Amino acid sequence: MNTVAGHVLVIDDDPTVRDVVGRYLARAGYQVSQAQDGEQGLRLAAARMPDLVVLDLMLPGRSGLEICAELRAHSPVPVIMLTALGEEEDRVVGLELGADDYVTKPFSPRELVLRVGSVLRRSRDVAGAVGANPGAAPTVVDGDMVVDVNARRAVLAGRDLALTVREFDLLAFLIRHPGQAFGRPELLDRVWGWSFGDQSTVTVHVRRLREKVEVDPTNPRRISTVWGVGYRYDLDSGDSDVSGQTEVRLENRE
Image (tube, rainbow, N blue to C red; front, side, top):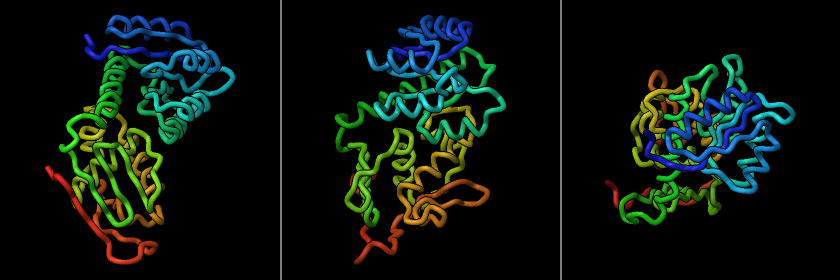
């Protein structure tokens, strides 16, 4: 049985899917709410924000992409999207909107329960990180960017970066291992905590992260692509907008 209890909102227009997913989640110890379309799901979320949302991509009326965007505009609630095999482009868009994971139909309900548990554990680790063991993780300063791992805060040129949970996890992991190249499967395992999953998830998040931390995302100087391997964070990457000497500091390095 899944040891991570919580409240899960399932939004899907197929009553069979809602019933099966709801029963498996309830059996695993979760409280489950169900909605047959996006509008009903938004109303339920507004009345009581769940710990996680399972959201069908193809909904009547407003699409799952629209609902995901609206949910994320009001809350960092984790979202797992349900998608069909032929909707790869929409899956990527869903990840870009901030979905934490997706499961492709037809799917195993047991697999979905495992994904729910994985995403919830990760999000709760994030929530508990601010007050837990404040000296354990480093603060990294790279030129005009400061990443405070304990506070879950990244500042670039004096302004806070608006990063999703996964984007911050990825940035914090890479910047704490400067100069090391990591493949997408390893990043899935060490950042997402997944032993399985579509590696395009990593590609999408790297692209989104570059858009937020690079002066020119098409010519990245911080998060480099290592061809045939994966990605690497390059410290002391001072860009043309920074005057003076670039400072690099790692505190309390493990």
